[in-house]
Each structure stands twice: as structure tokens, then as C-alpha cells.
Amino acid sequence: MSFESNQSMPIAALRGGPGTPAADVLAAFALRRKAEGVDIVGVIAPPEDAGHGHGGHEGCECRSELIDIATGDRYAMHQDLGSGSQACNLNSSSLALAAGAVERAVARKPALVVLSRFGGQEAVRGGLMSAFQAAIAAGVPVACVVTPKAEDVWTDFAQGLSVSLPPEAEALEAWWRDHALGRNAA
Image 1 (cartoon, rainbow, N blue to C red):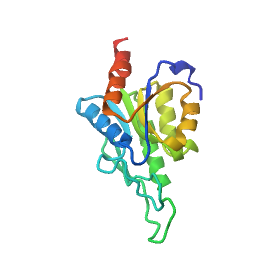
Image 2 (spheres, helix red, strand yellow):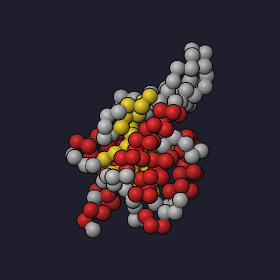
Image 3 (cartoon, rainbow, N blue to C red):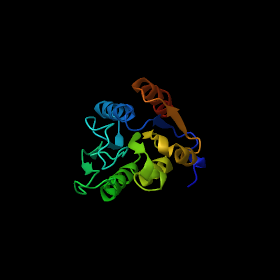
């Protein structure tokens, strides 16, 4: 995928994984933009769920669900593998449905795309990768969380188009003011 035509396209990448406030910060940011009437699309971990793993093994980054910011649709992110399972119980089919919904919403060129995270699934070109690609191709600003285990792949994928931010509300709000809103003045 070529990014040359989108060199000015801002991407905010909050750094953080399980146990950090990054998912909570991103979810709150998305909900504030929606309350302000910003044309926003994407998926987030619900605020009551963000930052908590629900997988079958220690360190699993699975969330119980993702919420479509624009429609309120919910996508179950884990499946019941039985009480003895130690495997990650990520529901990749549901994740693919969420990615497809975001791709369709991006086609109408919203003001902002918020994607819950670029993590292990995206690092192997699965998960929400197609939604990230659609947003970048459309030239729409993106805010997301990038997990530590996916940072190297993220760097290659984003090709210098993203700004790395600490998982703090103030940093994300400053990015929105300085980069995303500034593009509307042009």
C-alpha cells in the first residue's frame, strides 16, 4: 500500500498495552468527539471493559467486546472455549465483522476514525488491519492504541505518518486540536 498521497494525514498512536490507561483514554476521547457532534466512526473497547484482558491465558489482550462508535453495535470479542482452556479465546470472526463495518463507514469520509488498537492480530495482518488500511487510503485522521508487542510492525506500517503519544487525555486532545482540526482550516 502506498502512503505517498497521504503524507499530511495525521495518525495519533497512543502507546500502551494491558494494564495501561491507553484504552480508557482512547474510549473517552471517542465518546467526547461523538458528544460534540464530530462525524466519527470506528470501534472502541467499552469504557467499563477497556484495559482488562479476558482471554484464557495470562497476558492475553482479548476484550469482551468492541462497540461501533457510530451505530452502537457490539461485537463479542471472545468465545467460550470451556473451563479448561488455556488458549486465547479471541473471536476472529466477530473482529472481522467489526473491521468490515468500519471499512464501510470510512467510505463516506468521516472527520475521524478511532480504532481500539493495533496489536497482535494486526501485526500479522488480521484483526482491524483492513480498517486501518481503509482509513489511511481515505486520508481520514486516525486515533488508536499501539500495543508494545506490535510497535515494530506499526512503525513499518505507518511509515512515518503517525505521532507517538503517551496514554494521556491531554496529549490526545492536543493532537486533535493541532492536527485534525487544523486540516479543516485549509
